[in-house]
Amino acid sequence: MVLEKEESVSLVSLQSREKPRGCAGCNGKIRDRFMLQALDRYWHEDCLKCACCDCRLGRVGSTLYTRANLILCRRDYLRLFGVTGNCAACSNLIPAFEMVMRARDNVYHLDCFACQLCRQRFCVGDKFFLKNNMILCQLDYEGGHLNGSTERQPQ
Image (cartoon, rainbow, N blue to C red; front, side, top):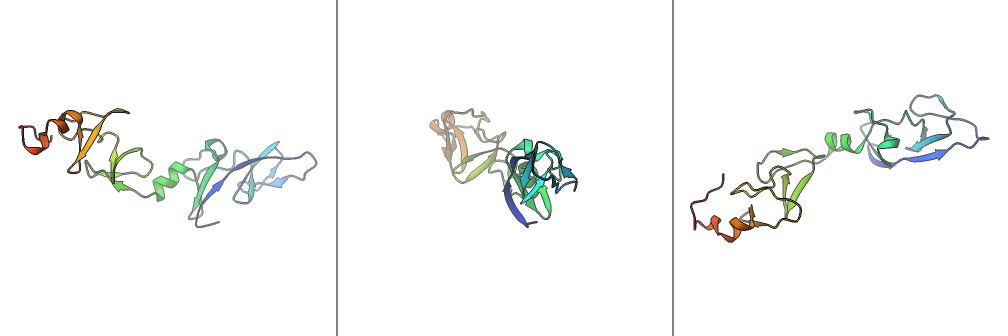
């Protein structure tokens, strides 16, 4: 098995005159109407599973990942081997599989993507501003609260 690879999974029809193939998962003969083809081998639909969560990879999608002799779904591959970073607002680690928000080069947890003065959360389509590496809502940006013109301070 390859050290690190992204592979596609395809569903193949077994022709009635064709000799049954051996399953790479259980070593049994594949007599089903359909079989999966992945990693240059054939599998029963129930045998091609993620090594971590046991999800059936033929149903999850058309991609699987291999690394360190493990066959993995996308989520577990990213959880185990994905690149992580830190949130620009709270500085805590962001797991590789977690959804994030981005503003320029900064990455944020979804919960941290809010005005850093008033804590207003942003919705899709809301206007926000990045000033001095801080996310601000329109009111705080236009009010100049970051320039010291009011008493408002980051919470």
